[in-house]
Image 1 (cartoon, each protein chain N blue to C red):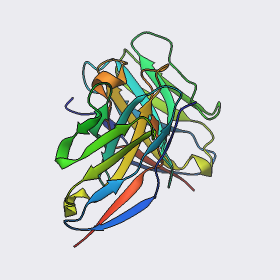
Image 2 (image 1 turned 180 degrees about the vertical axis):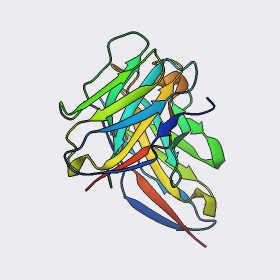
Image 3 (image 1 turned 45 degrees about the vertical axis):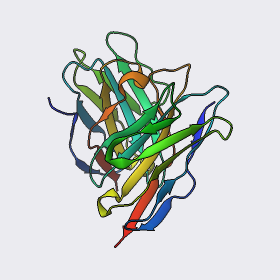
Image 4 (image 1 turned 180 degrees about the horizontal axis):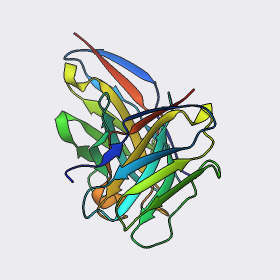
Length: 116
Length: 114
């Protein structure tokens, strides 16, 4: 597609429920990233996918968080047993390659998750 | 470990005034440096980046930033603010040992008064 597409744009869920957030990267972009933006804070790296390589999951805050990328394209971030502290904007980005200094990222508009 | 500090969570300027948004980084070696802008309900958009070469970098919408190694700074400036510049601005570094990862500052919200 023309840009990085994320869905839903807004999600309100009850504490303890599971949620799935979807990211559709730009066609042909091999690298895909998930970041979390909490109120008043910067973006926090969560996970990175590059082609068929093992993802870098070093930023996932707990084992309630997981992500997958099917067929090297669409990615889904899953949060199990959501907690109120999970409330944030979840941003997805994609890049032509994994060298950010060459190409930078293209970000989606994000999914605003509210856990009540 | 690298880190990024943005001084001032909010900066307010009058239309036509100089814009100065401060960014300092912590790194044992000069990293790659970036400024992103986020307009309301939109994703982040790359304003400019420094990798190597000229230390004064020009970006979109009339913004520029200067890499000062001695001060470990990468401040963002624009000579004359426009109402459309009101947004949140993020400074970011790419660690030399993780070429794919960006570490972001906490952001500065720019308010432009008429």
